[in-house]
Each structure stands twice: as structure tokens, then as C-alpha cells.
Length: 175
Image (cartoon, rainbow, N blue to C red):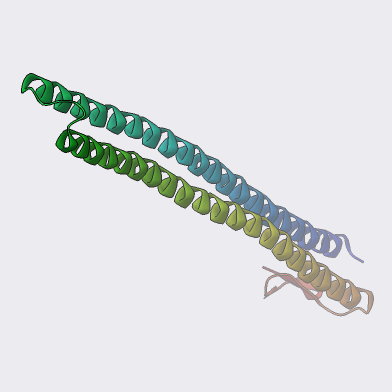
């Protein structure tokens, strides 16, 4: 086998290895990016729950202030705190306050779960990108090995070697 032909065969195999490595690296980087995105979504989910808890605390405080003002106005008007109307109004304020607290917590939990769901999708997408890169790199290696073996067989039989598509001296084709 001539030196130039050996060099061309080695270049073919090396380019196959480089292409496969690049494909794997791309998949690993896509996976890393997706995992980082998923971690950020999970952080945001926790943040949404914390915001909802603070909102619930504020809504509870507002309901307690309304109830306190209602009792103060009633007492200033001479209405007993045990009067049926005052008790009914207090119960209404309490119910509304409970609803507002529950709504705030539900909203935060709902937003948090949506972000966690997205994080799961991001993680799966990253794993899929990594797996696909390995499969694609394997295909590239097999294709390059097959091509290299074919060219080697041609060389050992005295047939022309082709790299690219431009025919050169001694039956060697350059590209």
C-alpha cells in the first residue's frame, strides 16, 4: 500500500472518529443544558410556592383586620359581640378569608406543579438528546469503518482508492 493511500485511509478513519466524538459531545452538552433548565424550573416551582404562602399570610391578615374592625364598629355602635347578626357577619368574613387563603395556596401549588412537570420534560429531553448522540455516533463509526474497510479491500486488490471524488495520479482519487 502506497504512503499516500495509507494517509488517505487514516484520514478517513480519523474524520470518522472526530465526527463521532463531535456528535457525542453535542448530545452531552444538550443534556447538560436541559438538566440546568430543569433545575431552574424546579427552583422557580419552589419560589412560586413560597410566594403563594406569603400571599396566603397576607390574605389571612387582611381577613383578621376586617373582622377586628367589624367588631370594633359593632362595639362602638352598642351591638353585642354575641349578637346573631355580628356572629353571622364574622362567620362570613372568616369564610371569605379561608377561601382567599386556600385560593392563594392552590395557585402557588398549581404553578409549582406546572413548573415541575416542565422540569421533567426538560430532563427527559436531555436524556434523549444524549442517547441519540450515542446512537448517531455509533452509526457514524460503523459507516466510516465500513467505508474504510471497503477502501482497504480495494487497495489490497490493486483497485482504485477514492477520497472525495476527484481522480488523481496512480488511481488515487482526491477530494
